Length: 210
Image 1 (tube, rainbow, N blue to C red):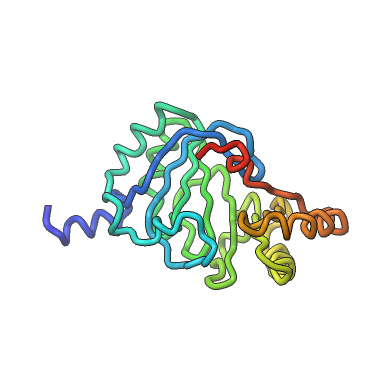
Image 2: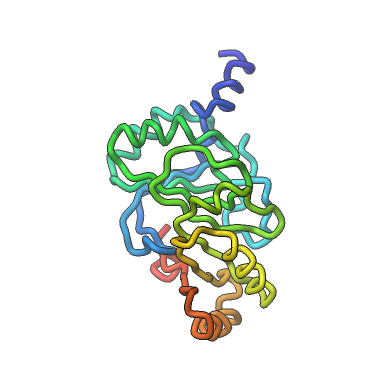
């Protein structure tokens, strides 16, 4: 395979930079506590300074893997497949999700929404970032909005984003892990004063699982 042919397959979503894949318990948001198989796709230029998987940022560090192989492995473990990153929408998610759906499994995505929405999704977790805002279409389709709270200004940002999502979207505030002790009391007070929000925690970190 030539370099050009390889790049074409990547651009078409038939090859994806696979960072890691693992079976675990979903630790965040609406599906927390649920067993799921995670597929972490490399590549992200959003650049959150508090990102806990910065090793995912450079796609060339991760092997370009056939989507057929990703699907074949994933369906051995669970009927809920969570695609995360990095920023998975950097790539065309159509081929991956089409194959997953043909196997009868549920497809979930965790995304900043910074790139156009591709793929077939049963659940979309939108986690917007200030430095690269979501593209418009995803607001109408998001099932949950998860806003990370690093400082007090993030409450204002969260409300701005909440005003853009559809009426059925579930709203979550989640403390950035390194600031959890400082920000958690503020989040609790905020949610009690604004009960259209819910609290999300990274329970997998408390449980010491991936």
